[in-house]
Image (cartoon, rainbow, N blue to C red; front, side, top):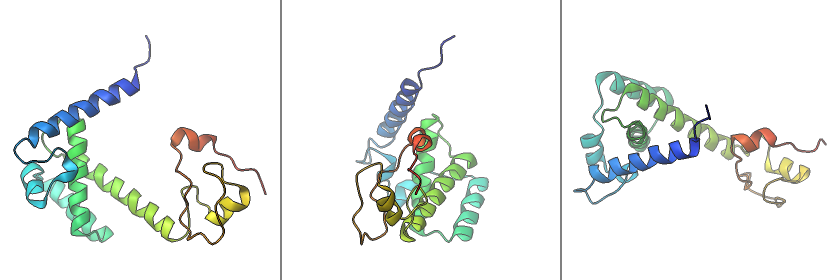
Length: 161
């Protein structure tokens, strides 16, 4: 038995999710979940009691803003669309919250002068950045080196000092 063609499976799921969104928004003048307004979020992203509780706890624990709340719902709606589901299950909301926390962690790293490899840009300059060339001295701490995908991250090795 041959392994499944994962890129084709992903492409099919994404195509179906986009079609679901096109049908959902035919009368709203938008074409994706990312474009939903707060009113549309209430209409298209109703939460059951468990999801509301989960999101409320996350908002309080992580100090999230109303804008973050909206983004979490949009991502949860997209995850549900990828699964072909009409309802937002607590699992979709939880997954969306996790993505939001990863974004916040990444932003904190960048603000603290750390990059996706856990090194500073000066360290990249000293070692010679593998992706994107050298990094100029006096850089503001945000690493311009593109973040490698999981397969590239495993291959990434800097020469020792």
